[in-house]
Length: 167
Image (cartoon, rainbow, N blue to C red):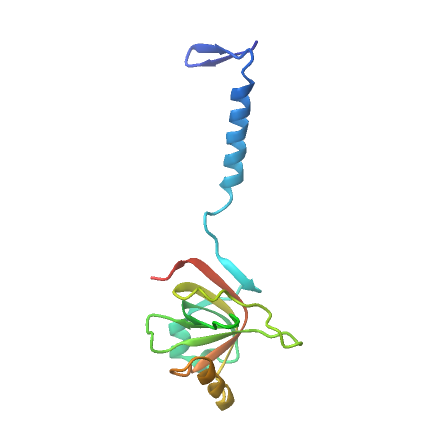
C-alpha cells in the first residue's frame, strides 16, 4: 500500500486501479484534444506558402496591377458551379462585382480539384493566376451563370475555405 497525501490527509490506495485508469484516460483525452481545433479550414488543391493575401475588393479596384500574376485573393463565396464545383465567385463588400475562380485543369482536361457546391456565404482564399477574360470566355460565363460578366477570372491552384460564414 502506498499512501497519497493531499492537504495533510492521506488516502490509502490498496486496490485503487479504477482511479488510476480513470486519470490515465482523462490525461490521454486531454492530450489528444489539446492540439486540434474544433473546426478547421477545408483545403482543396494546392496551398502555396509566402503568397500575400489580398482582399477581392483591392483586386477588383486595380485589376491591371494584379493581372497575369500569381496571388492569393480573399472574399466571400457568392456562387458555386452547381454541376461540378469547378468554379466559384468571390465577392467582397461591394456585391456588384466579382472574381470568377476556376479550378486548374490537368493535362488530361480534368479539374485538379473541385469544391463543395454548398459553400455560398463562406469566407475563402484562392491562390492562382489572375487574368482578364476574352470574348469567348465571357460567352461561356453567360451560359454557366447568367448575369453580370466578371471583369476578372483566376485559374486557381487551390482554395482554402473557412468553416464559418463571412460577416
